[in-house]
Image 1 (cartoon, rainbow, N blue to C red):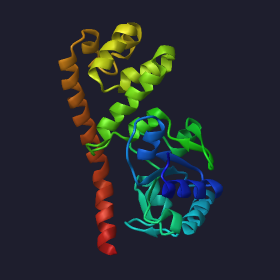
Image 2: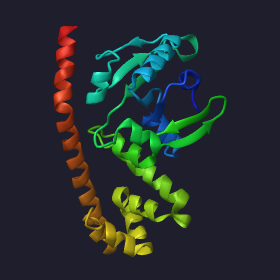
Image 3: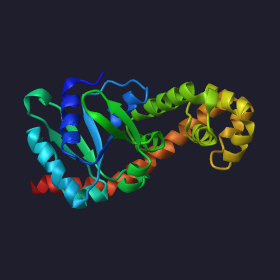
Image 4: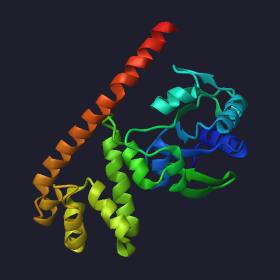
Length: 247
């Protein structure tokens, strides 16, 4: 069940023909990994005509910018997020975060081409980041994102394991963060596991059913990704600080 303020915002963007993709907590809910979130996170096209439609939709929602930067295509193209708060009666208080570029994710055109499409009651067809892209976007410094990655993959395995495609199995071996599930997958699909081994060496311990070692390697993997994300955001944070001082 989509909360009413988020429903109103999505309906406004959809009816305004804005090209956007749902990401963040709301996308996780729709993929079956429950998460409580009052915010709306969207990936958007920064094509001029789409930004024009987006600004009209934001005006309908009576939004105000709550942080720097302004809704600027150059800032979005560099990886910044633009943040707004709604004051329209049905969406009062809703925060909307807009991004166009995420670390290690492809450009919006590619994200759009491989999106997942769902039909939401009273809204219509809405695009979500594909599950692999959503997982990648969650590899951040924020501790709360890592359990969510784990739940996303667990939900996908639970739903599709009995009729999995080769692409899905490879994806699970590359991204699953549950030691017991990795061991089960390695037992069920040893050939696929060996094919992905060079990309993810910890799979060696899945083949050996060494749950303790997998857990340790997963912690190291998480630490490495968090550091990459920290390095990615360093120059962006410096820009934000400069904009704040200038304001």
